[in-house]
Image (spheres, rainbow, N blue to C red):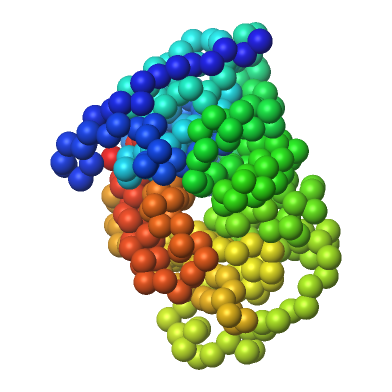
Length: 392
């Protein structure tokens, strides 16, 4: 049987260098509910003086290498929730952990941040998600059991090369757990990450939609981004209001939508877009447009994260396509410590601002979007400059 973790709603935080006292849990405070993964990340970094060459795996395989190892709280859902919380939003994380040492560290860490933990269920006999992140200067190998494991290999400039994720305990997050949280907390906005089982994802979207609560989907990875297509009725009913894929997830989702969803009339073609709409867009954004325009038939808001190329928002309004491109915030390559969590931080802060201004989800042309994305990009930059999954 799972156990519930209780915490106080009262917290004192420092935001933008000013101490802010928040009394969460009041009806006047809009609540963001994030349903998804909570993980222990282990980041391993090669020591600079080693003769490791990332382009030559033989230089670091089948041997041990000196370096440093860091442990951080992670998981897409947890990262999004923390970023939103740090941005000033009352946030409830709905997740599952085991009953091992890693779960204690994870829960204690979430409590110390001031966040709620009553949405997290602990399961006896299960082990907690542990992510092992391999960075450019150090590589270690670990024994994978029933942990939620995230193993990431980073290039010398901190970019992700590949990763292996073992997230078995997330299968313990059930539709009934999410429904109970919806009923007891009445959030104003819900975010689901791709770690959830397909039936839980779609049940959450359908139930929340019936309660007039908008649902945002954070795809998490290419394979996980396709889970929502296992229930086509939920998608065609418009239960997911917004999504935040990267360019690779966007393409995969569009291609899958063409295969499994009813054929829709292509109202908007690239050739019909005006020079003004396309002016200033980088090639990466232009390449994304056909996929984004197609998906705008099924999702009201599509926020495509383009990394170093910025951010593209697409949708429809008054019978016409809406395109809004936001240039990236500048950061030098030597300032980047890790890319882990940058996209999650972007999404968390974006949702924090949208949760207080839900009208933006219905009006993509509203000027407040400029401020929403500005703060979201700042959050991503802070995380890039940090070894933590959510930069302060």
